[in-house]
Figure 1 (cartoon, helix red, strand yellow):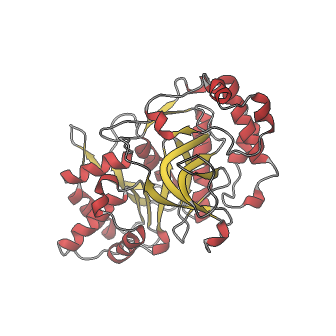
Figure 2 (cartoon, rainbow, N blue to C red):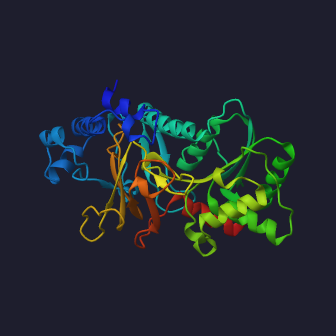
Figure 3 (cartoon, rainbow, N blue to C red):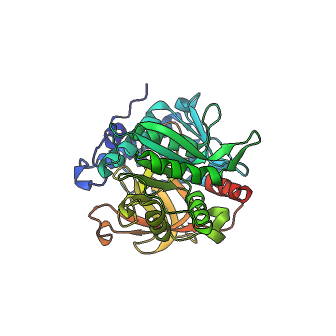
Length: 376
C-alpha cells in the first residue's frame, strides 16, 4: 500500500484555484514526498537525480522545484517509465492511428488523484450535474474493447458528470480503424436539438469546426441546443493547421449555429504524460490549479523564464506514484502570466499556448486524429 499523505492531502483540496486554501508548505511537502518515493522505489530515478547533482538529502530540503530535473514528455514515446505500483496498472497511450506513442501507466491512486482534480474543477464551474441527463457528442474515438487511448479514456470519464441519455461518436469504427463521420455528427446535432435535453460536446475542435462549416456550406439551418449545453474541447488542430481558426472565432460560430452560450464553450489542455487538468476560464486562459506549478524554460539554455517570456512548458505536480512524471517538460511553447492579469477573478497564474516547439517527428493524438478528417 502506497503511503503518500501530503500528496493525497494536496490532491484532495476542493478549491482548485484558491491558493489561500493550501496549508503552508503542503505543496513543497508533497513534492519532497513523491520525489523521495521515486528515488527509493522507481528503477533508474536515483541514477537520474545523481546525474543532475542531487541526492536524497537535497530532496529533503528542496523548495525550488525548478531545480528538480524534469523528464521530456517526448522521452515517454521511447520508453515506458514505471515504478513497482505501475506493474499491471492501467496503461494509456497518446497517439491515435500512427506515429510514436507515449505509454503511461496509472496506478489506482494516481488515477484517482487525477480524476479528483477534474471533479474539483467541474464542481467549481458548476458542470457536475448528477440530476440532469444529457446527450453527448464525443468528437473522439468510438471505443473498441478496453479503452487504452488517453483521449478516449478521458472523454468516457467526462461523461460521468451528467447522466448519459445517449452518445454519438465523431470517429467511428470502420473495421479498419476509425474514420470521421461528418454526416453522422451533423445528424446527431439535429436530433439532439429536437430531443430537448442538454448536450455536451467533447473532443477535438477540428471536427466540430468542420461540421459547422459543412452546415454553413450546405445551407442547413442554425440549431438551438437546450440551455445548459456545454462544449468542452481538447487537443489541437495539428495536420489541419491550414483550416485552423482561433478558438474565440470557433466559439462565436458555436454560439451562432448551435445556440450554446459563449460562457459554456471551453478548451482543456492535457496530455497522457501529465494528467493534471488545465481548463480555460471565462476569459479563455488556462489557469494553473493549486495541484501543480508551471515553469517556462528558455529553449537555448533551459533557464526559467520570467512572466511574459516565451519558452518550453514545464509542469510540476506530485500526484503520480506509478511513474516519475512529477516534473515533465512538454513539446509546447507557452508564456506564463500572473493570475491578476486575467481579470476573470481567479487568483492562480495562467498560461497561453503558442504551438509545438520545433519540427520533430513526434506526433500527438490530436495530430493523428486530425488526419482522419481528410477521409470524411
